Amino acid sequence: MADTLALAQKFAKQAHNSINQRRKYSDNPYWVHPERVAKLVASVGGTIEQQAAAWLHDVVEDTPVTIEDIEKYFGAKIAAIVSDLTDVSTPDQGNRATRKGIDRQHSAAASPEAQTVKLADLIDNTESIVKNDKAFAKIYLQEKRLLLDVLTKGNEDLQKMAWERLVAGLKELES
Image (tube, rainbow, N blue to C red):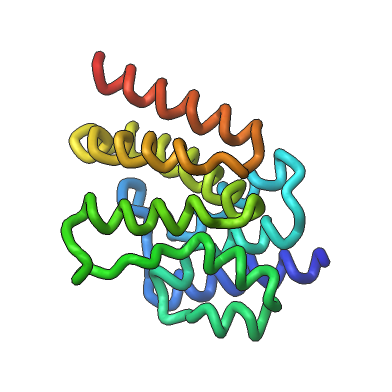
């Protein structure tokens, strides 16, 4: 199973690097984000499959990789988690609020394994956005509050941490 995790790490790095994807505020290679998400998942006892999915959670949305590619290389279980983590809305389905509502319904129906990874993703993104983009953080934190309301099946420690980060972010914006 350790091979699965090493392969997921390599695959994610190659996928994000293939399009020269960078983190918005730091200009770091994009893969530093899934690496942090995977570490958070591991810190609460997440399975190898969850950790691999954490590495892969943005590749379908952001790169030419498909869910079918994930299934081919990593199997149905990891592909199912990644699918649960991949936004399903499309630009033609309305404004941002409408699309986020569609994606939130998708996340609400996600497996507990996927919700755990999603919570780790939110924790990492919240820190970055609040620190670097106060204007967008106001919108983002409201969206995340709604999302946290439906992420009820994920790891309880990450749920608590995500709520704490949300509250801290809101307080920081008020100051």
